[in-house]
Amino acid sequence: MNYIDTLKITLCILQKMDTDKKYFSKKLIDWNKQHNKRLMPWKGEKDPYKIWLSEIILQQTRVEQGWAYYTRFVSTFPNIKKLAAASEEKVFKLWEGLGYYTRCKNLISTAKFIARERQGKFPETYDEILNLKGIGPYTAAAIASFAFNLPHAVVDGNVFRVLSRFFGIDTPIDNATGKKIFTELAEALLDKKQPGIYNQAIMDFGAVICKPQNPLCSTCPLKTRCVALLQDMVDLLPVKASKMIKKQRWLYYLIIAYNGKIYVRKRGAKEIWENLYEFVLLETDRSFSFEEIKNSKFFRNIAGNNKSVIMHVSNIYKQQLTHQTIHGSFVQLTVTNALPLKDYKAVTYKELIKLPFPKFITAYLAENELKAFER
Image (cartoon, rainbow, N blue to C red; front, side):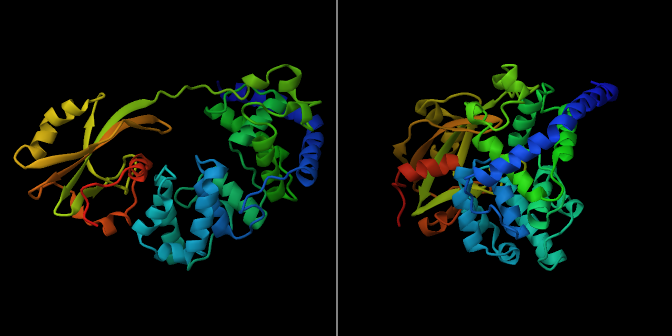
């Protein structure tokens, strides 16, 4: 779609919006005052550090899951200088299980930058906030409006859905044209006098009323002018242009104990679970049985010339990530000689429990004892 077509769509929407803007905004603000009971610990917060922290935690994360993490982070690191001064392993351990660990890496980097370059003072303009590592237009708008009452509209999944349904917009939300249309519409609808309240209201409305599935259309205060409801299009909007193809991966972990210690390593850059720890890894291009694992060249190189005892073989574990599905299992074994494994180190149990691991591994550890460990 070219620029002229995009402009025509935007103009048509804005023409409808001229008649519906006051209705939309008034109904939304009234609903927020009278009926919005959605509770969150960061709601109404004015400290930009805490708002930033909550927004980073909530990227790709449900509120119910992020709530406890936010509480622990604020308790452990009450201000940005405390966060910046902490060791990376301590921060990653606190983040453990939340996923999307690049967020944690960016969190640490930004905290150190603000503590070092800005003496701990959080930026107060949209453009300065947007320039921080790990912050995009949505997060910058949220911090700017909530902390400093600056007139910048948030456009997240909830906002896309509410606007798409109310105005009947079938332009895909995940291409450049759609993002431009919805961003301009959101900015035009924004209540400039109370942008923070308005932004929170429309996000909450999308979360509790205009939900992805089973929206509460019968009690919706916008129902008399909602195009999607009037034209029976609620289940069809918003539209996405692309369908994600998920990659399948098989990870088999050897939990190798020698002399009361277990071998671990930190995962490298530009991979899932960057900076988290793992056990000795055999990755394959398909599902392997235990016999295939034992007969693999990788396993034979480790245990072939070393007396080994298999202590435990797990069932298959599975973790669903956004772009890939992880399958695999765990084999616990002991060896009688030290292993010259590159990049791995042997750690005690007390050292191991302080290290951050990905959810795929912590799920196994939560259900199974490390049998070969001398504690």
